[in-house]
Image (tube, rainbow, N blue to C red; front, side, top):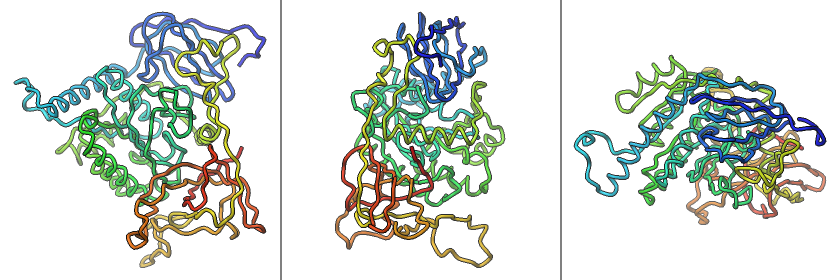
Amino acid sequence: MASEGASIESKEWTLDPETEYRFELDPGTSLAVKLIRGHAEVFGAELAANKPYLFGSECKAAIFTWRGYVTGQPSTEYVSEETPMAAYANLHIAFEQMRVRALRDLRGSPVPEYEREKSSDPPRVLLLGPENSGKTTVCKLLINYAVRAGQGWSPLLINTDPAEGGWAAPGALSAAPVHTPLPTCSPGNPLGAAATSAPTALSSNALLPLAYWYGHAESKRNPLLMERIIRNLGENVNDKYQVDLQGRTAGLIVDTPSSFASGPGSSDERQRLIKACVDAFKINVILVVGHEKLNVEMQRTYASRLTVVKIPKSGGVVELDHLYRERVHNYQLHTYMYGQIIPPPPGISSASLGGETLSDLVLSPSSTIINFDDLSIFRIGAETMAPSSALPIGAARAVSETQAVSIDPAQPGSGLLNAVLAVLAPPVNTDESERYDEEILDLPISGFIIVTNLDIPHRKMTILAPNQGSVVGRTAVIGSFEWQE
């Protein structure tokens, strides 16, 4: 990025209909984009005219059909005439028709003759695809189109990819009803920011996600735990729909990890997790992004009872390496603790920015010293859990994959220093006689803390939290994520 005193380096691009401007940013750089005239959108979120929009933190995105100028120096930028947007728009239209039929059925409105044979179920969509296929982008597009439709829809977006993080920290699986278009300004907030970790004045921060802690980036680390969390999310979604019949008509969209499509795990394991999603969320449409073999597999397994559609992969999808994903996890955890500021390129005033005022996203985390006994810390399963197939014949596990194992911070090798801990919500039942052994697995997350120091001689630890709330008497779970400033 140019220095503060440098002249503004800008470019103007004129796009023909159904083309898009794609860009990738280097670390430490930002980009400002302004729509001069016409209409444009970023993954389904519409841009206002004559307002600069900021992008940073190695953001990789595309702006569809616009004419404007760009300030900054993206490492890669080009215009593409080959986009799958027409196919995605057709999907949105089909889902919108399903929502209208579901709402009409709820209200008891008359049904036209030509639609009497069609189902009145709202769209409940599962996205599947390999790594770097653009699944999350498709989810955002479909969600953003739904909330922009002007019908008051609030579809549920469900994130079952623990590497994505969603509205929480990486390692969480979560769900939230979406009321306004989700922004794309930084991978630090891939699905917008939750109201619990940023000022609620921002439109995307009206999100109140329900999150459960898985604790690892890969589903193969503990598939039984992931399956249980998926079913927990499904039960909560169904409970919500029992009391919010109109909200149910907006439907839901489920994003999944790439390991559901392909990877080192066994096929049976992948099929079991896909089936868990189909059953838990009562899926009626499966979208397969750019993977012929997986499409055939899903057609063979599910086509008799639900719709399976193969959709094209965008040519703008970027191949992301392991180091980039690690940096994104750091961005997400830093954003959770400190909020997010994207410094505008020189010559761009914060007062003129479009979208949300990112200068408001500043938090002051609290560093607190607590006693070891103030917080009950658990790990789910053994620290390194080999797959069942790797165990000797006839051997049984000493620790089950879903067993909560208590962690003593004073013991060597506890793994607590710099660890990300998920602080769980208090149990619903305070009566000890009604508690059960695996209750920890069914408790949602209320927040995250980082262990920044261990004082073993004095049995004290220092924790970093985004607010000053007390964690004394609470329960926390450790995973495999670490973070340090």
